[in-house]
Length: 306
Length: 229
Image 1 (cartoon, rainbow over the protein chains, first blue to last red):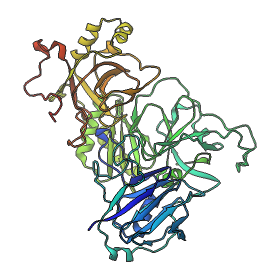
Image 2: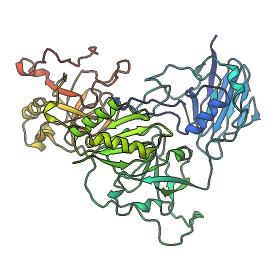
Image 3: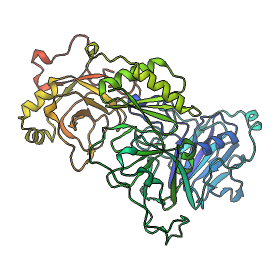
Image 4: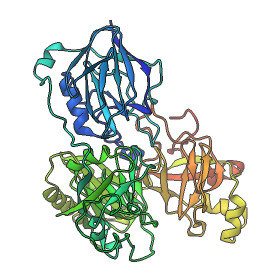
């Protein structure tokens, strides 16, 4: 008999995600998948799932689910307080959710995306080999809705014993100013001074989502209690050194694209495959997960590496 | 120009080629090389992005990709039109007259120009199955609308910036719509789902002029009519 998990009540945005789709660039299909890949992998490992199992990516908490059979679950990523039938349970831990019990995620104080893995994985039909919801291409399962019943795959309880029952989170979340390391290029030569990207702070706009973080300079870094040591003039805008047009080209995950407004977009999991604005730099792969946990209003700075 | 390698983070390299034929030739060469670290390839009109799996030493990978790119033989005379996908179009788009005005052509001349040359898919992006078709009649070069339409119906045949495309699904869009087709260019159950792949050839056919022998399909070509794929 197949086990099930019922979605009692959704939060602001709850999506099914896994490792995403690869090998479909020629079809115009991007990778998608969990935005914070480290927290996603940890959630699966805590419940003994094979890498690649589908989980729920829960944005800003607010999700309540009910187990229709005994299930192992784990919540990682943004530390949303989790309650089983009203009793607080540990973050980033394996939890037994008994038949008929509900798990409720509160709004996390820091971070943006929590990952709820279920032992056996969420066994929905895949599209092009993945159960991920791609919000840009509108491929894969629809966002979860109240009353959805999610089938759970067969669970191998012996696999659980090899995974640690509790561990620290994979992704550092909730820093005052998040530093993200970048490599300049491929189009840093399109700017009068590309290194200006790493001068001063940037702030995450409310118009940010799984496609990318829209960034702007904070209204007043000093007034906001900036930790930046320099007390010099305001951070410089990013200026193009010509008005020529760039033929559209492929975009990697973490690309920082600069449209004519000078306000960069840092591309996340559901980014478009190609873009026609110059990419000034790309965030290192190891720092993508922390970028994916940044909330609107949070500040960050870029650190040049080579 | 010799292909160049540009930095694109630590999980991808960008090869600058400067023209579509070179991009497609290098794309084919890199595919054939079956590099185990390669995750995905995104060709565009003048560049090729090669993405790699985690843990790859990007410097040595980039060096191998560049060596393959530089060693690729580009022979335009050998370009095989293959079996162009014939896309039947009813040229009744809301922007047809506007395009005629801006190009200084009559509507009939716009249509003749659109069906008159083969188009080649430079890359597929923007949306699943949305192929950027290049190489058409240069007189058809018009800019995008200043403001995008919030909803463009599936099957809209459009031009902008020297490219042509068919909107495979309903989506927002800023291109000039000159016609419509019933052809299915995106089918999630087909393999591959996108009927037009990078490097693929397309010919548009005016279905209101199908009596003309020159626009009927060659016996070997497939016609992208609904249900045909």
